[in-house]
Image (tube, rainbow, N blue to C red; front, side, top):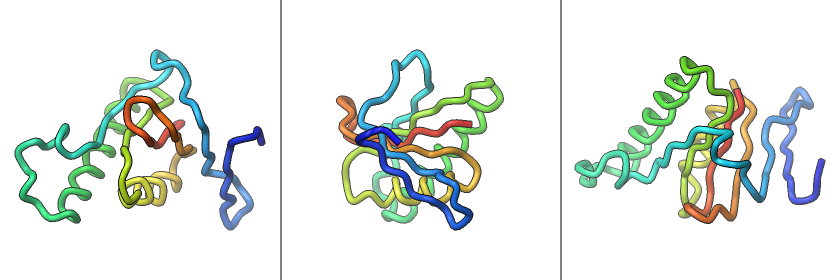
Length: 116
């Protein structure tokens, strides 16, 4: 493992979670920004749990769409905050995909990278 990376091993000893400081060039991956005001600007009245459910739906739809387009590397921008959305993404997506945390991104602060 390289310096600056973090790995969390699963119960089977496999490593599914890595922490990276810098993303690769944007032409190598597709990006979705899950900031709620960008994906659902007219639904600010929803409760936090309803907002997170919608953000997760957008993430799943994005992944399915990118699968059909044969794209293997995706970045889901979660932004700064309490980390609840990022934690839920990691928990749910690491069952199926290789998931890496990206930090110190110039445009958002934090994101999750998925490799299919």
